Image (cartoon, rainbow, N blue to C red; front, top):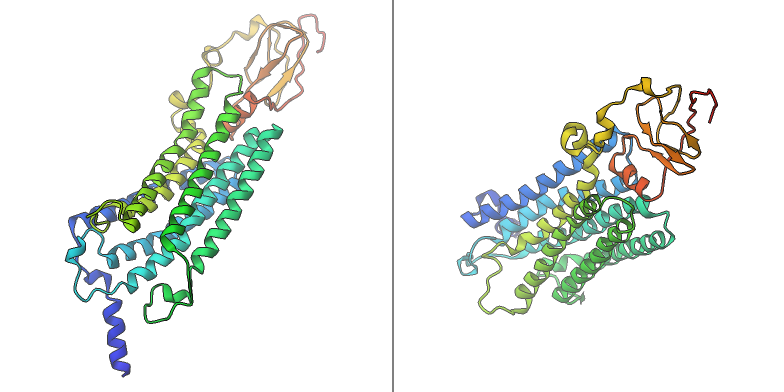
Length: 380
C-alpha cells in the first residue's frame, strides 16, 4: 500500500524538468523573468542611491518588503506555469493530468501577490508625505489612504489564506471542503479595490505638484514621472478583464491556457515596483550623467569675477535672507541677486537630489545664517 501511495504522489508531483514545453511557454517564462529581473535592478539602483547619500527612509523599507515578496513570487509562478501547461491548448493536456500541483502553487502565488502592491503603495505614500506633508489636507489624505491600503492588505491576505477550510482542500480534491468562498468573484472584487486605491494614490502627486511655483516644463516633468505608475494600473485593468474571460466565459471559445494572460499578475507587481523606484533614481543619474540630469542653471555655470563684488561672506548650505544688499557671493560661488527687502533663495545640490528641490518649490527651505560684508564694511 505504501509503495502504491508513493508512486501516486510521484505521478502527481512530476519533476517540472520532465514536463514538455512550447515556444509560447518559453515566451511566458521570458516575460516572467525579464520583468522580475528589471524590477530587482531598478530596486537595487534605488537602494544604492539612497545608501550612498545616507537617505534611506521608511519608504525604502516598504519597497524592500515589496521586492522580497516579488522575488519570492518568482519560483511559485514558474512552477505554476509548468504544472498548468501554460502555452499549451487545453485540448493538448495529457489524459492523466492532475490539477493538484498547479492549484498548490496557485495558492502560494495568491498569498504572495497582494502584499506586493500594498507595500509599493505605502512606499509611495510615505515618500509623498515628505514632499507635501506640510499641507494639512495632503497629510491627512495620505494618512487615511495608507490606513485603508494596509487594512485592505491584511484583510485580503487573510481571506486568501483561509479561502478554503481546511486550507489544503484548495488543492487536494480528496479532502472534503467545510467552507469555501466564491473564488472568482473575490479575485475580481479585490482587484477592483486595488485599482481604485491606485487611482487615489496617483492623484496625490497632482495635488502636491500643481501648486508648486516652478517652471511649467519642470512641473509637467515631475507629473509625468509619477504618472509612470499609471502603466501598472492599465495592466491591472487588463488582468481584471482576463479574470472575467477565464472564469465567466464572456468570450466563448477563449482558452486562457493558450495565451499570455496569466503573466499579467507578474507584470503588474513588477511594473509597480519599477515605476515607484524611478523618481528616486534622478540623483544617481545626475551623478552619472550631469550634463543631462543636472538642475544647475546656466547662470551657475557661467562663472563670476569675484573681484567685482565684495567676497567675505560665509555659508554652509541652502539659505534665505532679507535686507538691502549690494551684489555679493557666498563662499560656495552662488550669486545673490540685488534685492530690496525681498526674499532670496540659495539652492545647493544636496545628496537627496530632486526631493529637496521639490521641497524648496513647495515652500520648505533649509535656512542658513549668511554673513556678508559690503564695501563699507557694514555687516548684514
